[in-house]
Length: 577
Image (cartoon, rainbow, N blue to C red; front, side, top):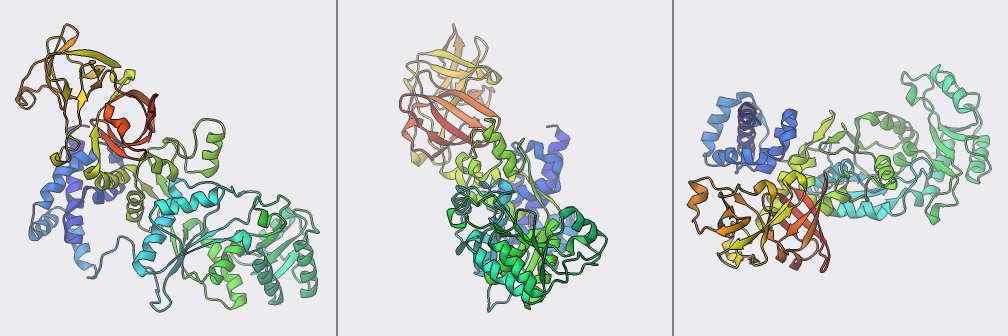
């Protein structure tokens, strides 16, 4: 990173830190400004690992100002941004905009409506994060409704139901109710019958291509004016499975001349021969399309507010025709753009991830290279960190980018203070390989602190009597010194480390490098990362921790301990720098 870019990062960070501190009337936080900083400056993202260290001193400087100094500084740097803050209504601040037309008496009921065709990727978490946050703000209700009425194209995965509920729990939320649409097929049939009676639906046996041509030309198909009795008979035959797939559908009667062809007489029910994987739904062959099923459920489940993608605007308009037939009031709708996530080579696609797993290119849904919720959890990233980053994206109708560096910054603030430090020496060629040296003279063990900010937690004892290993890139030239962190200053002589006994001034005044190390007979570790596995040697105390504990490998980053093999290789998952 050159000096010019560093200066730009510091300038942008100062503005965001000042705004954060003034807006919340509190100290600014590195994690809180990472999202806006990356969102407003996409060119910074490739330096996401370095940026927290660059902006931390800027944040500290801002936090050292009083309120008036901060306002004066914003007025100097970004007067228009200060005006925005001062023009906002006073009251409790929320990272998300208020929901429209909230009725305090009836409350807010929102839903997530996942298709259980696989575990969640990171993009799926956005809906639960925002709905859960709104539920907490309005003391409302959170409904999880599995839209699983397509047993063929988006075939449900029986394991995914529980996996999705687990993902919601990982994010810190618990649904007030869980509903499977495939349990409600008879309810959809009843409403289809009522819709037929209301003149709102008809059965159609036109070949798909033929009907498409008619629809695009604004012409009605010959079945549109069937009498209700005939429509009922043919629909019951659909329910009884008397038609083949594609032979008969039930359509909602809309406006065949509507200026938007997508809203003209759309399919409500079709025949699917592939049995549903759930035993309770396996006998059904007549299945509702998503627009019909979801529209009926949103009303029956008393959903007050819906969040959906901007690309699904036509869904609300199609469903409105059904609501008009029944005299129902449509829920409030908030449309938003899609979210993209940086850092991953794998796309946010359930089918793509599943294919990579099936081909052996990924080890599973929790592979660190997979952009999935399960992967983040296994890496030791707390759900709260992901929720906060998603909420900071807001509900804009524009597409938004989630910078993983903002998730990491949030998580770092959550875990840093409580996480012990440890040494892990990597053996890969990219780090110069492992180099073993005997210690000549000096103490029998190093005693680095468990946490540099908490001496009261004690120190860890790392023996050196069997020799030590360092990364080849850290090995000094013969005759030069290096400071083994937590042990002391040694000189590289005769292919050994001779204890030099210098005090810390060798580091502070003479520029001696400080390096991490491990005993030569320390436990073997495999660190699983987004870039592949890294092997090496750790300090002995690591195997005394419990699975799921977090440590910070000094000079490397945080890691979650996954498999502590007593006699063989142990495994940890890299969390983030």
